[in-house]
Image 1 (tube, rainbow, N blue to C red):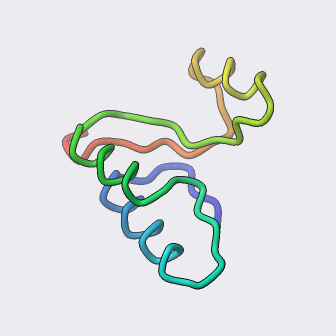
Image 2 (image 1 turned 30 degrees about the vertical axis):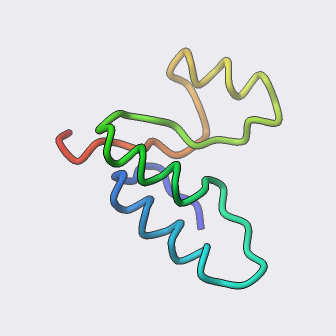
Length: 72
């Protein structure tokens, strides 16, 4: 599934569900999602294999998923 925006808590739920299935590969590991949730920071999950995607994300233009803190 593709998500435009998720809260950190929603990301934890998505990744935890993926991690429970044998042989699955989550885009972010569960520990990282929990740290992100606790830190209350905004983040972007994207395909980092193309450096241009990373540069675009830094400038605020990306095709990834915005991870937003619960307080936003």
